[in-house]
Image (cartoon, rainbow, N blue to C red):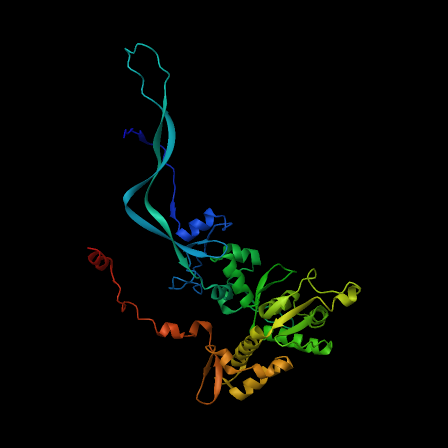
Length: 386
């Protein structure tokens, strides 16, 4: 088999390039056009605040870079290499001149050659991570207390933040679109139409909206009872928005957290009804499995915050919880639905446990750092590889 030499040159003007190593799953997703966009993001370094900075690799630490897709987040880390890594570019070059004593002229041929256009001693690798999106949003979103408050209060964690739209939050936050939307719905965050600014409601505001929905459905005489769903008509939503001054976007956020909202295009509206009657059919469907634990958790948050002692009596809490549910769901309220979200005290009271303070059983079963059977340092791995 014959072989041929390929000329190799190093360009005088080197380009500044960074090499990014893609995980196989991300590479395949891009190749198959399942990933529509790749975004580099980072948390801005704020010397006056440390609320977002943590030591966990799963949290968006300030100054770190992240690569986000539609549904995944990767932390970007630079890895040094002892080898010289060249980025080369193929170039069509001319063959050497023929000998002078050639008996006849031959056309000059072109041969392929390689030219190094960049030199790198490091690569960027991507580490799959699950960012703590909810704590991040809670730390940057101002808290909405309700229509009767003099102004939307801002917690001490966010006293230095700037109001942002939902689009700005997504663009600047180190998380994928899917992770952002999931957290946005979970905390009932909303963007005010009047100001285009995002807020997160306090537990008291969330509970206030839910109580208004309950009383509104009863007052409208439209308490449709289904086994696993509870219907809220459009006219009820409009009524509490106009009469109680709740933000329409907040009402939608609460309903979207515990159910689904029918759009005007998909709502079941009889063809022979006029526009006024149509308001009765464009509605939201609240799901029982989402609503019952959600109301219990939200109530416990508000009761713990407002209680002068360490907690609230279980019997008192359970009665208030049942009062917040549609009548045909009240018997389904059970304390075990809130497992992991409350702490029970010796005096028969319970109190809400913040997510950051919860200890999962799976975490208790994990060995302590450095106690595992795996190699602890690089030289241990080297020994085992011999």
